[in-house]
Length: 206
Image (cartoon, rainbow, N blue to C red; front, side):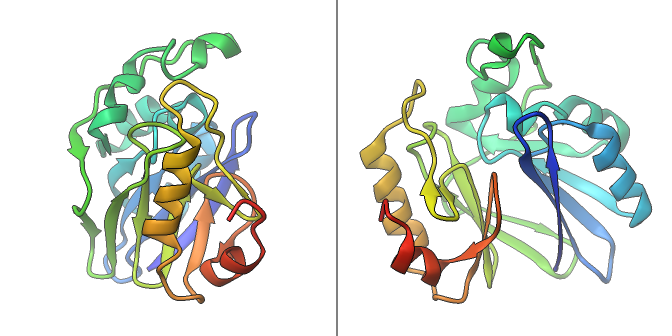
């Protein structure tokens, strides 16, 4: 499994291209803007994009959904509880940044325990991790977790938005992320990577 991170949009959200080195089949996690950069990387690596996976429905994680889907034909996947955010500028907060985003509806609705796979090497388990939003998810590979805005290096996601809950977020982290091995790499929705072990020992919120 190969991973490439692009920090996109005015909020520098981490967009991840994840692909099977053998088959070149791929998925993209949180295309939050700068679709030209994302599409250029897909073309550069000659990837066959199968899925667009949104860890949650805020504008900085979905803004390029439409363009990437139109160019690649990839299916949009999101947790059922965040699906309404894809098509509502009020719910996804894009109305407040002056560029209303009404993206395509989800092609597939995700829930806890499902597996997303592409090619021979990419298998991601869906972890429902509410707290930042009701339908927030993390995506767990064998030795890595894409944490969206649930957990950051040295911090946690905001919980003061509609649908947020501080206690739910802490429960999600403690029950779904921290039980993993110390060496599991964390790929967050913003900022640098970390590991489960480092966050367990040093994150002031945990």
